[in-house]
Image 1 (cartoon, rainbow, N blue to C red):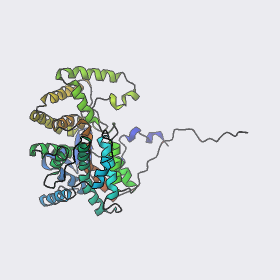
Image 2: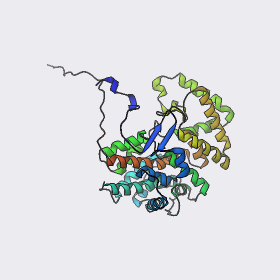
Image 3: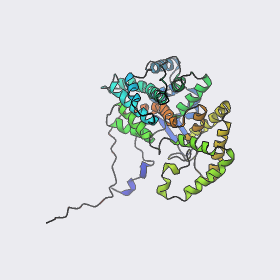
Image 4: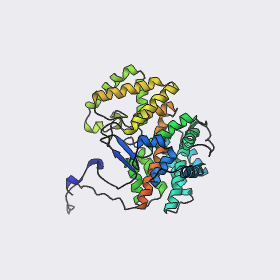
Length: 385
């Protein structure tokens, strides 16, 4: 094959045609079904943004109410998933527990053997609830507490927070998580979404596609950066130390080989992106949320550290800030454990995973790229006597 057709990591290769999400990396813009992300989070709650991603149009009030009711009606973690989670060691990573829970649920899903559009929509609605309920149940189990009973009287974001700590959040706090989930709902063909589409293209069931997505999210080159951001900010601790920390980190990185720089542990977490050349559109929204939440919860010092790190990186590099950087400050203000951050991300992103899966099912072709062979030329085994 002509080596001009090969790009490492499929960078900028068009691998699908989609009407769901557009990313303008040069301008730092993100669009859901043509609507700019800042407008989406201002006008739509997470459930309505999910409907927009799935069906192509923002629902009117009656349709929005019906969709909310449809999602709420799926609440209640299956007993089989509870049983599977209880068998796991208490130090199991939350994403591994989530992957296990979704696999367990697949075998007991009422539509396990069906894959028509209506069945897949029913599965998608159940998965929207199954993901946060599994995350919440595992967090409770691993901390020696009983999972929280299902409630149908809360909006999705409020329900997610109640599953973690058993308390109903204030409307203002619930709104913050609602915005975070909406910002994380979709982002074109990121690694986990592409994995889901590859699975669907084989006509695997929807649960299998979501398991593939979660497994891909587990990799530190895709998920986990917000965990690392929070760890970094806490390590710095004092805003006055931020500039020196960034300088040391960047100086060390500059002395590494290309292979060494590829190690996620060598990155400046929260900065850089495969698509964006300027700051991530979502980060601009999260920066404002981080500031207001830090002030409301007495975490101004952590936000100030983040601001100093942001300024120091900008002064020394051209790296754009990505969605993970300020979201870590928001998660901290919400009281979310650092190793749960990527699981909260999954609670939002399952909306996009399902949207892409439904789109792939509707116009499917097996995704089967080629490899540029660089091994030995044709040869034969030596004849031995």
